[in-house]
Length: 563
Image (cartoon, rainbow, N blue to C red; front, side, top):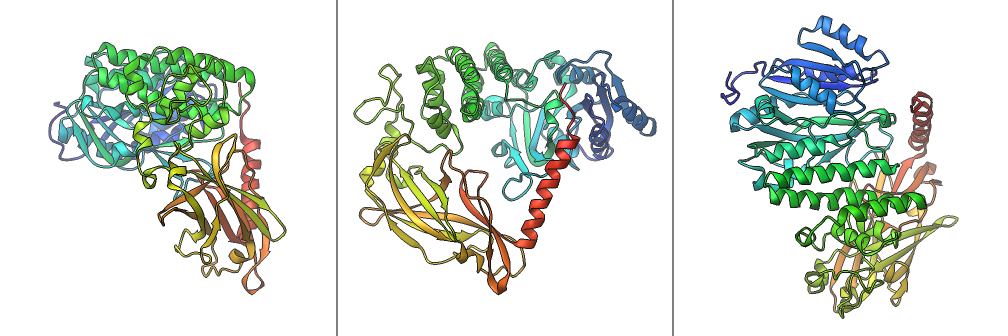
């Protein structure tokens, strides 16, 4: 059968490899989500990695009633995901193959969407959008329960004759949101690392891109990755608390780079190193301050050794990107230093002035031997184009709260523009209406602290102004803090306010609202770190509190003990 033949009707052309270990609670749901793709899925190869629970028995029972399911049980646990995936790949007979982890799901229509894209374009690989879903929903992302992965790659349909046409493909290291032509993988000897190799997707993905496949992308949701409280027991789940996980990340990243470079894919290899700076380094640098001294030093030493392998072209690829700046400061200092500001720089969005950047006269902030960082493009841009940073802190009082705001300097450009005042407004996220008129407060003279140079202002927040706002549908309301910075000469710039690093927000409080009702007020930090205020009727708020408590209680009692 020609895998590139035009696709007209759903015929059994896709094999799905499902892997699992000691995941009896979820593995059959994963297999059923593959079967629910319809007749396009001709076989499901369920590989049990020597489970000690009821996983194998449940799969065998399912296979007895579903002829498309074949169960393969490994005699020895591999300790990773690569070996069972290879085992399943060896058993697949279909022209195309997909991979699915036991704790995750394929959404309806995923296999058909990918197969149509692959066959219509004559592609060796087809990819779609993967979303991360937290279960149970203890913390939700804004606007829903799902967070997309590399959404920019899958914003629209696209076909690439070679990965070199879209180097950004290197950033999507997942294997589970893609469909592969089986013979393409076998002809090029593309397999996963065997044994206890963490982040094997990095290596597998690099081997795929190194082979130069024709690639089709679709905007469809094709994979749902579940994040559960017990996920640290699964082989594919990262545990960033230990230094071993960071060592595994760097080893996998190094292997991916070397694979691409050896295949002559220099641009992709350089992009792999940029991806390490932009994703891995920034993600772990944000958490470094929360670890103990021993972990920090081990992480710092390991990271410096890996970054020392970078050459000049790697650093010049995106010289002012936050990850590149973080990498330079790690290289410049033999010991961990300035961790709060590194975390601020590494966070998303990265806005604060790095203290190790050179000033316009060439004077470095703290290190005479730090390699010069090119900032000229930022030094010449008008202030209205710069990513200004205002952070906020709330100090509770009896019926009010003191809102302290700080506007931070950025490469000397803010002082040149002459900031004079802040216009403060709270706006309802659902209706777009403000809680009251804008409050204008003057900015104090610039001061210097551990966070650099900043201008400050204070505003009194009155809880009653929010409590007496009517909520006709009886639901909660979220109020976002909106600011406008006014500069000398009448220019202004609208910004949001980030919760100040290390600052504790006031606890939720009860207020008497309209018609003698009781409402709960809760300041909180949004997913992006901005300050917001949630206002809810007391009945709904109390149920929310009770629900959160019950979920935490059930989670504590149901979570298995780590081995």
